[in-house]
Length: 475
Image 1 (cartoon, helix red, strand yellow):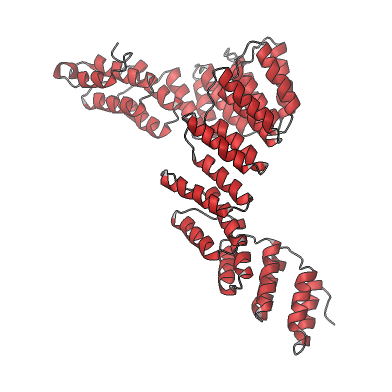
Image 2 (cartoon, helix red, strand yellow):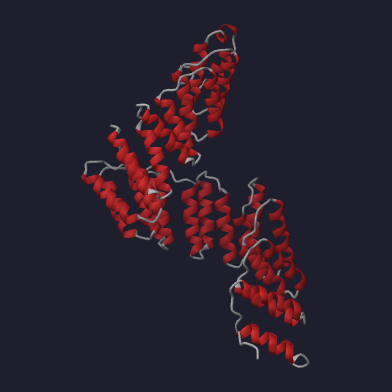
């Protein structure tokens, strides 16, 4: 009753009373109650306190704690608790092994999960459908569908029948690996065999169709879901809105947003981010900013994706001052910028010749232990060249090579032209060697650049260079 009334603090205080510390049942009730309200740290602390007092928890309590930790993906705590359980002399049952298999799956250790599953089956135990679903889902996401087929046949042979969740995780794997047509076939086959797809199943397939731009088919599936009396959830709306936005159909995306409110399905930050990104793609940055204001009016908070999208949108419009304002707001909110925060800003600053500001941001990235993209280095090399700062351009170019990044063809061309313009022929030839080594063929502009620079007093050097560029064997 105390927990139902959200009086967990009172319950915890009660457990500290001397008369309660001698009763293991109180601790077991606390552990289970914390698990049911997802207060995992408190559940683990209470379990450890119970162990410290010399109590050995029952198998049901141990399994409930392990199940909770797997559900919330806290495998960091899971293995420590399991170690404590073993020290109690606890005899694991089929449920315990099921949670161990699920924990291996959560950590991506599929070989260990499959080996433990085989061991459990050899001992005459059959894990529940949730355990099979977890391991099948992981193999599906990795596109290891032969393994999926083996596991399906195995679970059926052992009397554990697949449910709609089993097939939903397979559908998810098919769609995420570009096999949407196979997903549609499986979906139709499920319906023919009497399975009732739920909202999650429909949403998975909707997402697959939207990702490949099949919006008509997604629309038909949407109406089918409605005809069956299924109410779309927030995730269903989000994937359909995203599909329409990526197709440039912003009116339909905004109509779905209004429909969400009408149906009492509250949009979240992800919903608004999707629409803001769609507007930015169409260069409607002012409308995107207005939508951001409406989002705030609805009591929703911007996240890093909101800020990054708007930064990119303003930079795309060539308005780096507004983009920097958004960037400063991001910092004021206490958010940590990402690579996507800096990349468009540095690019636009380079285009505008504001190299000092661009380098300030670049160095800030490094201080935050962020790794700039190859295109950011390209922008900085080209930007320095256009500002006739060849020293900085060469430093950035060499940094690219040391980081094993491949410069763009334009980067080589602009750098060679700048070096030739400064009369640094040896450096230009060195860059040319790198250009050829990276698989690029110097074009007419690069050839003309060398010819113009070397003609006159250095005709022999010109001939040698030109032969290298157009690959004419020397005689």
